[in-house]
Length: 343
Image (cartoon, rainbow, N blue to C red; front, side, top):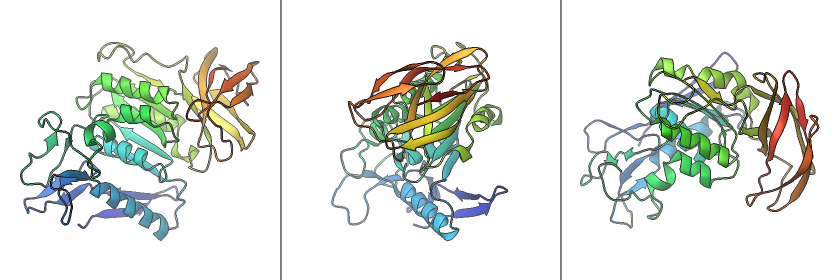
């Protein structure tokens, strides 16, 4: 089915690709919003008799993106995804399932647990939903559950330990689209799997005021800092993170962020050495943070491999690569106004 997209040139010699996630309903009664994935159907010629979830929109977006990169000779290593509300959910799910396409993703006011999907099958409710439909929604393989396995972002982050696009997200505490507890779950999952991410929030809702929290993300983590062929340090458990609270919208810091203030430069990514000079603008005295090398091009580690580390703040020790070959140095010290070189 046909799709509509537009390409614009922005003021920084970049391209902006705009797409729509709606399709004309085959039943002829308007358009179907596909939540940036696809729809539930029985394709013509399919061997299965029950409806399944097919990634029509996802495939179409991937085609449009690849066409744009080739047509305008854009750098395929520096492609980024943005979106707000349903677009934030779509940019999250799509970018994570296609790390071969995106270097970073910046969702605003997004939903982390997708709970519905459009259907073009005449005998199914529209849209199908985990809240109103008591059966699983299988993907096209007939096994994977669309809601539980593919559209739950915290679960996806916990189960995928490979390099994913950097994730810079914001939310408003009073947002009605997603519970604050789900937001906390997302931050915990990203931290536990040592993914590169930063998060910011304010005390507004699902509107332009809530979306302004993204300014803290783009200030410290502009898209230009990320490319798929360039390593960067992922941060976690920063000692100067604000308090997200216990899940109640009124508990914890009403305005704050996770992994804010960091900068890095002089990254060395060699077969037998990785290093970076790390600082934090918000550090007032001394702080600590866990550091994980990500998107390494040459520095590859194996499960159980032991590596020595040192830093210019006086620390040294040994770290063991986890079962996924990921290496994390915990509690790296950073002093106010100074950069720490971690090797």
